[in-house]
Length: 256
Length: 198
Image (cartoon, rainbow over all chains, first blue to last red; front, side, top):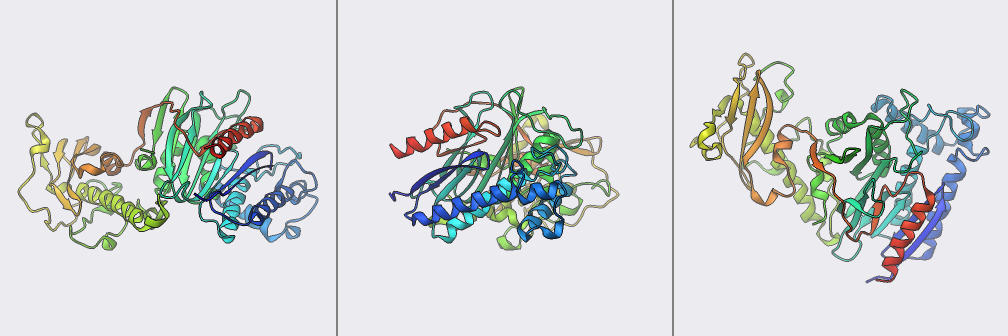
């Protein structure tokens, strides 16, 4: 077994775990870490000097934004339209005082880019976990795919489901486990509480993460929306009443 | 079949059973990318798993297509066990789109058993008020029992279950937290340590 590299970086207000199972140059990790800090510096709504804060507060104009920032904002807008506003980066006051907060998409987008960086450095078997949202490639061990747990909503150390994922996969869970935590429905401005958690499985964490947020806001209807509009994705939804709902083919990912 | 708004109206073109897989054009509900969303479990066997994805998709298509053969459905005798009612008509019956003017009669109907490359597939539907209200698959290739819920594919619906808790070993956890950095850091480091010491 290759020794691989484990690295946990606290950045963007969360722990990002890089679990690489190939023998690669440590400079690959340095590159990813530098990228994540670049994303933080660019998109953080906690940093008043970040371009996203400056733009959100009207201190710079759109044409002063880098192409990268404009691309992300364009992506956010397309997801907002597609989800009929359930995903909306311009609704709730951000920490910087503006009402522009693309964090809900930036996280998945930046981790997907991080995965591409690792691949460019020759890594083929790795798992990146950013605050519970995961982009992975290849296998955990030779001939053994990654075993990914979906957190049980009320038993933090247990899994509500264990999946076996390999090749190229992304999985994201939107939830409010702790008291006081909340996800705001952009349409009402109120916290949504219909579901305990929503997990989406797909290939590209950019969308998987954003859709997990949108479906969480939409509730069970959102899972049906996903089933109709994105049959290439799978969803696993946990209600507060101890019931779960899953898309018809979600079961294929369950670990045996 | 029923009204112009019928959701199955546009997927009523059954495949010829021995048609090549690639010819099974995806129905409106299944995008081509669905076939690609099948992370391989092993690097060395990506093709095998990709094939499994296609296979699942094709099986789904077969079921949906069979469902489309409503004009050829036979009313099942519910008391005599519907699964035994396999018509002798060849499964390869060429089908045309059922007349738009026909409405569906209420009852439980069994479709002709249709052979695809993995076995017999048969779909039963329940019609109530002229609309399909339920579908099941009395017959389908058994080794796909675990990975597919055929009846949910025929009429895509969410599958409901009861929440369970597992304490199996995992490499990583999705949804470890959306808010608590300390929790996430702690859990992830515990996971990382467990791997480092294994």
